[in-house]
Length: 206
Length: 334
Image (cartoon, rainbow over all chains, first blue to last red; front, side, top):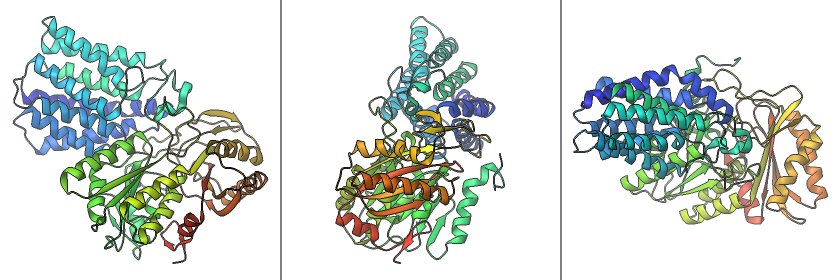
């Protein structure tokens, strides 16, 4: 468990988002502006380009660089939100040993950054509806003695449930909020990409 | 998808190359950072005006760069906000000591990216930056439970009027206050007859049947508030104008700039039919049209449809509206 695992995670996220780009854009067409898949794909391809030409000695430098790259390349709302997530996650990992507990604190710091930037609340039909249950499940698993892989698997499963639970919600943030009641019945694209990122973490970080 | 393009991924950069090739007398384009600059920027002693947003709304914003309007415009991907790096580069490049005003349309992505740029610029160079967020779309009724009203047509009028004030050498705070005053006195509402196709998506963002229209749309091909049966222009005009007039409200005796904007795929002949209906309704309400603007200025790719914007004006705003402007998208008196 070290910086190589995190590099593998980011590469795996890039692959997963590339495969799911059309799907994410289709979800975004229903209640947004049809660019989420293309944006996330472009952003993570840029992260991969950075990984190809730079080697990182520490997880915090790696995650911060990934965050800055996403801020620089993605645009829209997902650029600042995911960029801030990785920036704050990286900052929290500075000088600490990699354990399920410290990684949990890093995830919390990342999600707090997302909240500060996006000002969303639970149930607003945003990516936070996947992040919140994921963190809760992760914390519970770690408290129960699970290792990192098991805790991330629990987080990914909870995120998927949170993602599915966005379907009936009426959006209160982002572009989908303009649809009012008509946003109900559609799965939130941001909660979907968050779940893909966590499922990738469960596959690669253990 | 049937478009005059080469590759979907090259749409924005090739369009910017085209802008650079077409207007070398007035503009300078940083293709790397996707920024359109006024050729003679920065202007000593003048507040720098920057706007930006997703591409696909042409001529906004790049077409409004030039004398009497913007100093720089940052272009994002189609319907996607530009990124903070672009805004920071543009901010530094147009600052000639008088500070910079960011003109931001109220969309979650635009607001977040401009906010990050302002935070980074403050930490970095010490350039004085103020910003104004436009939010004139009355179709968004419940601003408590949404991301707030969208910035639409008033953005064009604001960039013209505030551009004239900056050209006169007014200080940053005064220019920013004027921008806020313009936004506060403007209201808009739009409708679509067809959807539009984002090149990277390859198919229309939503489907509209031959006999349907979407009322209360924004400018990103996002569906609107209501889907209704198609109606004659005179009914559509009141459907859009009534909520605009009652929102500010615009009252008998008020003077306005009346702006009928095409969404990109509607011919001028239809926009003039809409303007005729709007002018009649305003006349009946005792609202004087001081100036008018009819055409495709803030568009949504090839979407057919229109929006109506009213801006309540006084003599000062009319004078600034009439001041010389020389941009690819708007030009008079210069």
